[in-house]
Image 1 (cartoon, rainbow, N blue to C red):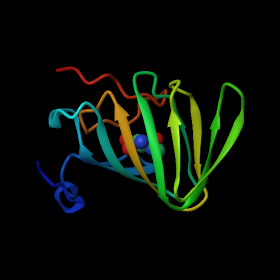
Image 2 (cartoon, rainbow, N blue to C red; image 1 turned 45 degrees about the vertical axis):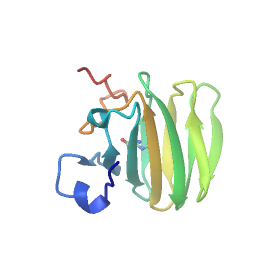
Image 3 (cartoon, protein in one colour; image 1 turned 90 degrees about the vertical axis):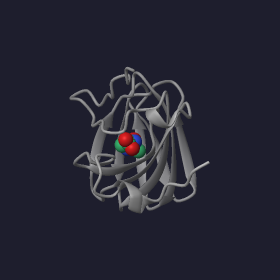
Length: 128
Ligand code: 9YT
């Protein structure tokens, strides 16, 4: 087994500033777990368009509050501390942070760890 601390990630390429968010990639593709795990802070007052067409993602909010709006139905989902949302249909959405939101994100398949969103809010599939 192994342990990974945020301290191990800071000042590495696995500490990624996406503009509206900072994501610390704790477990990535090369860890061979079949998923990736990120500790992500969404910055207060931001709105981010996201559409993970290549990944399923669960997002557990452990601090802060905001909302998700799914684009197919314009439904608004309030998100607060201790709430998980699951993008189980590759849902295109807006993520809006009222305060800083600290999120634990799990991706299937795993990402390589250095990705930022492209212009469509997508991450590519990590190739071998
Ligand atoms: C919660 C969310 O989707 N934030 C965008 C960043 C992404 N989840 C990541 O790479 O941690």
